[in-house]
Length: 420
Ligand code: ADP
Ligand code: MG
Image (cartoon, rainbow, N blue to C red; front, side, top):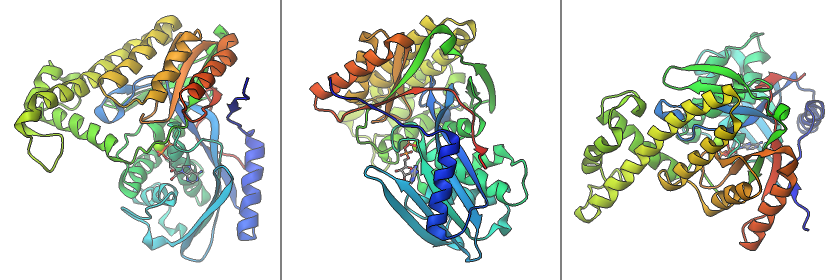
């Protein structure tokens, strides 16, 4: 049997020491402190955060650590130890050069969050230049939200570095979302930033995006001898590309044409989506051509059906979780995946195969998590089936010439915090 890869996760103390070491090596002086923020999995409620829906994520033990100190250079210096094989990526950029659309590279997530945090009043504008070092155990581009982990750790650090003992996390959350939307240009919703800042050990967070409310729900599946297995498919993907924006365009368009705040509040949203589909084609710049009308109406209806059914499913899934009906909860996960595959069309063969193999291996439920087009699957499994399920997924991927997947057991942990 080939040896399968488990994602390594450093204890918080180790990661803090490592990022401090990187900082000292890079800048020749000690950081003022170290902060961290976690990646996440979303248990259910996918592609509905930007649609006034409901999601149920939890924060992971895999975290991004940031060491930080003010400099008096009027510039941000940032370094990240990243990748396989490991390399150092660094940037120096004047403070005044950070803003909407810049910088257009990975540093935009971190520095954009500082810029937006100042705009939102959560970070002191007198902060000035910063030296920043980054280390992460959140796999990048795996659908586990390394982007939010980077934004939230950096933003919390900048907020607490001067003055704020207790940062305004709600304002920081808005700032981190703006970094992703306005600086990097990825039109994601607010799910990732909210859980990265507000996660709680042993709990999932039921977020209602139309009410802007959130409730911690105990998620102690270990007591039931169950685990959540993460399968990072390692298939190439990018969320910042047009697919995510294309889904949003349809949902935002139909929602406003129906005059509601969220599709969940519209009667007959699926049927009534035909009107928007008749007036707006698949491409925003071109009118719809006659030969495409029927096909496009069907596409729009399916996109809307995903959002409507997923919100409804998530409402029921929360009740199942709270009642301890984990078999039923697993069935909801599986139904969510089917909807994302057939109606929203954001899965790829790697995600579908991982779900099928997990179910064949005794999972109670499994689904893609995150934005899709690559990324990860989560499976709810009896603890004693985890290793075997991982083996069979690994083998199934090998047979199909997919990239070798990697695995982790997901443990609900705390959100962003100061480490030292
Ligand atoms: P995900 O959030 O699911 O991991 P995204 O595509 O949203 O995937 O974000 C991944 C991007 O975030 C990377 O391509 C990189 O630009 C940036 N990023 C995340 N973590 C780090 C890190 N530790 N160092 C440098 N860049 C990072
Ligand atoms: Mg992301």
